[in-house]
Each structure stands twice: as C-alpha cells, then as structure tokens.
Length: 199
Image: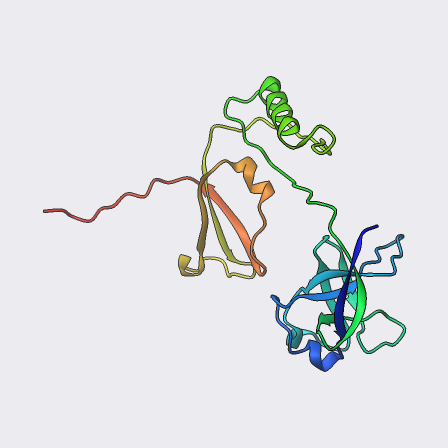
C-alpha cells in the first residue's frame, strides 16, 4: 500500500462550514469491510454551509462516499493541508479506472477486438482489462436531449429547459447523468429551421 506524508490540520465543524466544493480535504481512506489507517484526498459533496447538523459528507477521489462527524474525537475527522499542522499518511492513487462507452459505427465483434488489442498494445497487456462488456445495437435514430428542473410543472413553457446535447443516439442517454436537481427529457430530433426572412 503506497502512502505519502502530508502536513495537515484537523478542522472543526465551523471551519468545514466555510469550505466549498473545490476545496481539497482529507478523510479516512477506510472503506466498508476494509479498514485503513490512513487518509484519502476528497471533496465535500455540497458546500459546507449547506450541511445541517454536525455530519458532513465527502466523496474521495476513489469514488467512496464518507459521512463524518468532525467534532467526534473517536472519528478520524476532516483534514486540510496546512504547513503548520502535523504529518498524516495519505493513500496514493494506483492509477485510473477508465469506464468507457465506445460507439463503433457499423460496429461488429471484429471492430471491438481490434480496439481492445490496440489499447493493450499502447498501454500494456497487463494494464488494459475488460471488466464488463455490453454490446448493444444502436438504432439509426437521433434524439434531442434536454434538461429541465426535476419538479417542473406540466404545460409550462420551455424557458426553463436547457439543451444538453443534440443529435445523440438514444442508447447514449443511459451513460449520461443529469445535473443535480434536473431530469432528462428525450424527444425525437428536429432540425432547427431558420425562418428569418432574407433580402
């Protein structure tokens, strides 16, 4: 297990309330069923001032969601880098898991095997692995994908809509996530026609 020493100080709840989503913090690297006596880089899931009560939620760079009561002396708490602090052990990244959805036009099994072979050749046969694979035929239909507030009333005008993407295949919608508090609306694609009179 590779760790690095980082000088940091522990934050109290009132300090964390001042943090935003971009502020780097350190929280316990232990996961369910895997206790680790070190820390992981993380970020708050929402600005500190928006949390109610004493519990804060952070998401580590490894995708784990941690709930912390920072003022509880029995917990590892939330730390921030500070040269005047003390040394803590921070878990290093072993690499990046890239979760890809590949679209291969007129794709077939041979096309996918060629892509896989090329990736193994570029990064190393022991590095590139298939964790899961789903081959889905893509219908030759394009859709417009919109976002609108999750609690939007019916029959409201489209002023609240935000066009997220155009001309996408419906199969791709499954791999996208709407913004927080918004939902996706999928409609058949309509070409935008400019009716502006010209001279």
